Image (tube, rainbow, N blue to C red; front, side, top):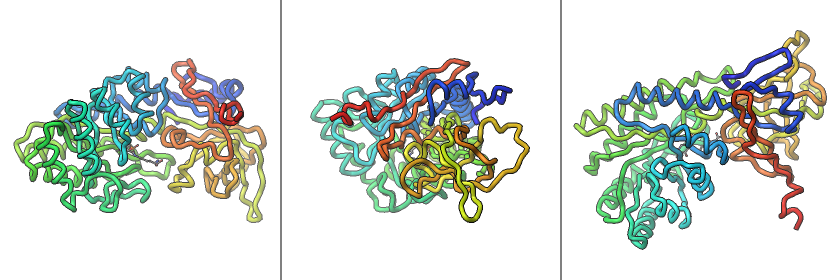
Length: 426
Ligand code: LLP
């Protein structure tokens, strides 16, 4: 649960707000973001990079984890950078007041419009993902008579230990310039030879929900060896994001200290060995910054029991607002509200959604009291890659999302009323 969670006699409070009151006003499913938790996580990472990396360092938020205009304004004001992957995220970031100098654009198939906007506003870096794109960005910069600031995304052929769908740096990855085929080296040479390209740095991203530090060390060493081979001293360097988050008590510890220490030390050592100046270090986590700040609140609709006695609890959301269980076998926990002092029996249970398919499960096995229609169920660690991947499956609108800060409530996203949309009304 978020930092500010309190169990008062009136029930659960987050960010100084009473959850039962919020539900009365805004309905369910309801997503809540705790400002203090997000800010605390940003501060923790900033403190760690300054402790473990003697050079300049920037903490950058991967907007794909969750982004909304009112959230983006907060993040911009807190002075972090942002990694965007589409025209939508880029425009929200610009409008929210992020300086172009802290925005970088990712994507394995960026559109012409996206590259054009990036060139026009002069962002920190377009992160070039292929040799084709390198040529294309060069051409577009030349047509505009401007120099494109770029990084090259390198794929070092490392399979970090995580779900295969969220590995990104293995030899078969669709992302980045492959180290093993020689195209990474070719890209550095081409970029440096071009008048229209300013190669600022190298980037790699290993994947997501990673708890081991070794792949980071290995990737950093591989990228610096490549840079040396090309005789290229990077001004900026990004080992991506990807540090894991603890969704349940049986997940590994998720303190980012070991990650940041290995990243800081590896970059420093790689530079020391080569007598190179330290580059600006850009880390770009999404999940670790925001997952824990979010909580999903659902209402129980029906309860039944399978032949083997499993209690099936159906809630009013599910795979459309949280596809992570169906996609990656993600594992969550849930807390029924109003049962804080419950001393009765717990039953093996399954929490399922309201959507029309059997894979619409939020929690496969959990022990819960017998729940009744109308009970509220909170699912913590719901802040990353849920709403940002949400759909309108079954023509159901996306949930309302609130920002909670010292007893104040702000709407991040209104509840989406599908039946009110102009499209629906023909
Ligand atoms: N940088 C790049 C280039 C990325 O592709 C990503 C995430 C990040 C940074 C941030 O990674 P994080 O720190 O959040 O792990 N939908 C999946 C996760 C997909 C991650 C996509 N890229 C999930 O729900 O597990």
